[in-house]
Length: 115
Length: 115
Image 1: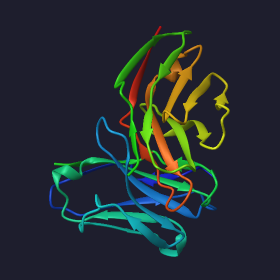
Image 2: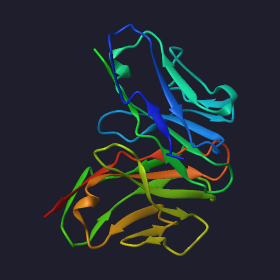
Image 3: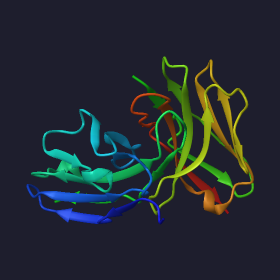
């Protein structure tokens, strides 16, 4: 197992375009989280999945954002009609379970630049 | 809502010396975990050390140790015998031991190691 994989590593897009990021968690991890990190800040929670169910979405996740985790495996995060304010690092993390400290494993992130 | 505060945006230390990074947090819960994460320039967030709130004993991992003061809601990280590879952003994070178990991060401390 090579850990949490995120693709692409970098994405430059024009304002108004749609973008999609992919996260492949550690295979036995049933929880998957998306965070957004802007320059000079700590990561902020966006949403999380327990298996295929999306259980919580932050108010940071506007209607232009959608996330899926079909079959409880990989996850995608789509941003529609991108805006310059969407420029950030998007981090994915996975963990084994709830109620105990199995810890998170983070991916290397996808850096989005909206021009 | 839980908050995590890191009041030192930047710190520097001479190689082989000891440095302490500060973190305070606010929560009304009694069952939670606290973490220090390291984010090197390569971006992947790496767990440095974790502390369970119900354990009075301070966690230690090799050159890294914490000073956990539950009543004061303080959680500092001490790095002994600092090495060049310790240079990174350090994030303090809180996670409740129930519900979505999402991490709440501080704004980070950039640690520079002076050769």
